[in-house]
Structure formats: C-alpha cells, structure tokens
Length: 417
Image (cartoon, rainbow, N blue to C red; front, side, top):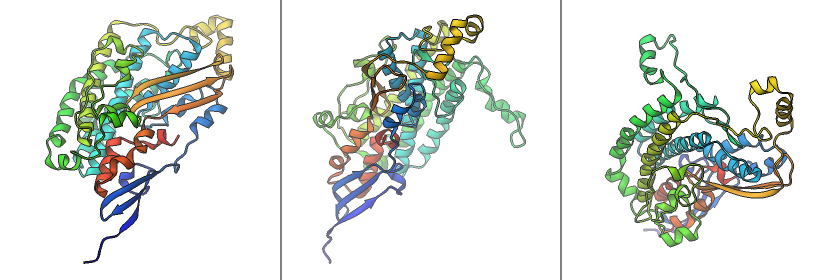
C-alpha cells in the first residue's frame, strides 16, 4: 500500500461552507489537518477609508453592510461613538427601542447561524425552520425603517422615528385569495408592538423545535462534541468575545459587565459553556435566543406604558419636527444646515462597543471638528476568531474544518472591512 504523503488543499472561496469569500489553505497528512492558513482580502470593502470622505450621517448606512446579518447592532456602536463625542443625551424611549431592536437583531443573526451551521454539517431541515422565523423579524425591520435588511434606523441622539401604530398587511392577489390573506394577516391587525409580542409568545416553541432536531441528535453530537476545543485561558489570550468566549466558560457580556442604554434595568442571564467545544457554543447561542426573547418581552411592556420622544431635541444633532420648521425660521436653518453639511462633531476621540451577536463590536472614532470622521477604526468580533482557526483545526479532519467555520459564525463583511 502506497504511503500517504502530506499535501496542500485549497478550501474555498467557492466551497459552499466557506461562507462567502473565505479561502483556507490546508496542509494535510492524509485527511488530518496539520495547518490551516486563512486567506482574507478577497472582499475588502475599504469601509474605514470610505468613512473619511463622507459625513458622519452618510456613513451610517455603511454600518448595515458590515455584518449584513446584524445590521442594527453595527449601527448602534457607531451612533454611540458619535454621541460620546457630541456628549448628547438619548431619550429613554429611544434607548428601549434600541435595546429591543438589538435583541431582534440577535435573533436574526443566531437564526441564520443555526440554519447555516446545520446545513454545513448536513442537517437540512433546521435551515428551513430558521428562515421561516427570519421572515417575521424582517417584517419588523421593514415596518419601522422601510427596509428589510439595511435599515439605517438608528441616529445620533435616538432613532429615526417612533414605532408605527399599524402593521403592514398582505393583500389578496390572483395566487392567494381572501381566505388565505385573512390567515396571513391574523397577527398583523394591530400595531408593530402587537406583532412583536405575538412573535415573542410563539418563539420559545420554535426554539424547542430546533432543539428537538439537533440537541440530542446523535449525528449532530458526533460532528460537534470535542471539535475545536478552546480552553478559557486560551480564549482570553486569543481575544475571543461573545458566544466564542462564553462557550469556553468565561462569563463576559458587555450588556452585564459594561451596561449601556437600559440593559442594567432588564433581567436576563448570561449562558456559558463548560467544555469549550463546538457543541457548547451551539448550546450557548440557543440559550441566548431564549434570553433575547425574554428581553424583547420586557421592552414591549415598558414601551406600551411609556410614550415619549425618540430623538434628542438638540437641533444641532437631530432635525426639528416638520411643524417646528414651518413655524420657526431658526429651526428651518438648523434643518438646512443638517441636510447640506451634516453634523459637526467636536474635536476628540471616542470608543464605543456593543455586545453584538458575534462578540464585541466596537467603533473607535477620531474627529478633527469637521463634518466627516478624521479616522474610523472598526473592532470586528469575527477577526480574532478567524485568526484562531489554525489553532482550532489542527489535528482534526477536513470535515471538522467545516464545523469549526460554522461554530465561529463568520460573516466577511465585518472581518474584511
């Protein structure tokens, strides 16, 4: 029998499990990985450089396109950095809306992750289940911002507008008659808050369905248990954050340890793993979905009982209302200056971070007093995780590399920014 020699395998970017534009150069001994070299740079969006030639507000939609699965979470860190530089207060109602949509975004992210991770490992059904729920969440995005994905909803000083009192409804057509429409619109007869509340009541049952499909499934466990083990000490040394860090047993979550907005007023738990393997990271994210659902419920209760403004009344930061503009020349001038020049942010520097679904997403902004950032640095949570792929994959089989990519929850828009 001929001796199997070491050889090099090019994995991706065309591979369906390479999640977009990841290219791995694997050095193999038979089917065992000796070394994994991740090549990035195939996407390179140059977001940080583009930011220098656009106003602070014009840069906001770029944030949606970084991690295009966690849109509003990216926006949140960006507007918080601007608010630190401006030293502007955000109305309490806007803070609750932001937190609610951060958690809706966490559900959007984790649903895509569980669907794609399942698909990578060979489980088809869970992908279809997860995308069923994502449709409802996208409808929430669309109702509040007009866009299903790239919302551009957060603003320095608050949010673009208050939650709508009516939920958009399906209309009858040649394919679907009145009876079918009535069923589709059952939970859309009230406000957006009513629709979100209906979803939160249904969602725990959906998570139970995912767990029925996967948690005790022997094939799922054979593919995940003991794969890509990272010790707590090593996870800290490698710069892990989010579920990757918590999966290794470190109870670190910015929402609890460095609370922002109204997270210190809400009750929720931080799930942590025990073994630091892919299976523990799966369990952590599943429990995070349940905790996010609980946070959304608390926000709904507060928002129902507490009307109020949703953006700062400082008109050097946020535009005045249309009524004020029509009756006050000074307000009209503020509006024109904001629309033409954008914000003038005081000279200084600030770092703001949020507990993004993938980990710590941070924006380090430097202002020279102009209406554009002097420099913008994005702290992408996925970058340190991808850098650790070599260490996590060594000694595993080629098929396990796919599991490890899945457990890292990689989206290249924020890594290769």
